[in-house]
Length: 462
Ligand SMILES: *Cc1c(COP(=O)(O)O)cnc(C)c1O
Image 1: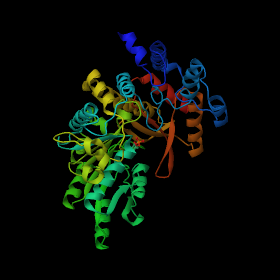
Image 2: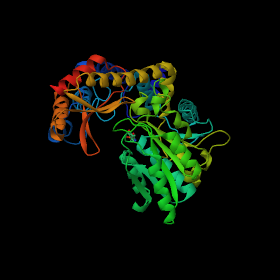
Image 3: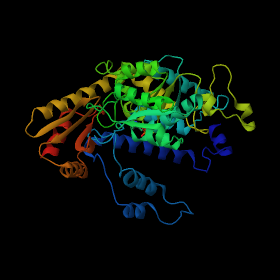
Image 4: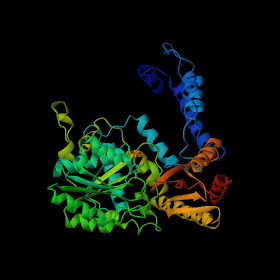
């Protein structure tokens, strides 16, 4: 029967037979597992000039089929090799992407079934999975269970979605953020047409946090000028230093002045799962809206970001029910996710979260996050044990530590970070804090060992 069916309806739209499909599919699994197994011995980052890569991957438009095995090799060995390997245990630059295998499988299944979560009638199963995952994330963040959410491509898109919805509901007004707020927030505001006089980029305090006093004096000035304060953007784990703004104090101010509190937890919010960081992050529960980025510290492959927000704002802003979508509209508890953000056709980004949460259990996530927070503290201690060589510029906070070599200038720090990355042993970046260039490690991969940290620091200092 199966082979009859095969004859009548070939399994692949463009005609590949099932034997070939299996051969390729298993080869893909083998290539990925091979990559995951040999990470420690492979470079943390590999780059290449554009001419070389374009020559290797380009060429004439392939009007006729080319050998699939050769193309497979080119993809795995040339295209996918030359990138930052954010899942490498010694990838410490910017923010790593230590994705986990169960999440990869969840993503693959969604792609294989061409999952869609745009409307309930057109994608009930994937939409239900997304509702479940959003509820789980609300619980993990300590937010009320009636909060709504939507999964998007990343932190940038999550915050853009939040700001658009808040402005649609409350009208225009001034937004307060700090010089440590992620650059994507400023871009979101400008994209949405906020004018410069409505964007208050405030200086951070000596601990790189947005202080309540600074916000309070700015809102007072704006009110005097007849401008309307609208929203405070706080950061829970800044990308530069891991600093967490004083969320409880900012929440009090927002409540007193009826300001919206958006918290950007794209980097740090998942640290709330760790017993070690739970106290620092307990203020997350005051968020009117919260951005988090599961493709960073929740071990998901790119891409998936998440917005959690008070109920009742997303649909009025984004609902789109044109005549040709009339027969795919939700009722009851059902949700049409196309009406919660900028995307209409959207794959299910929830499958990988759902599958990995269930497969590993949240306890494993807590343990993994807690371990990295501890490992950054180990890095700090290791640096402090050699005070004639190293200066700790910002302490270990949520997996991030910034430090400097004694008597070295900006160029020297940049040169050392570049040289280590070029060697492939580890990938490290610099950042600027209050006009000073420093080295920075972002440690969120549970496969990283103390030995990896010691060796990376030693090589930077050599
Ligand atoms: C990474 C990051 C963002 C942007 O998220 P994307 O997923 O890259 O769009 C925003 N804010 C913070 C604090 C981040 O670390």
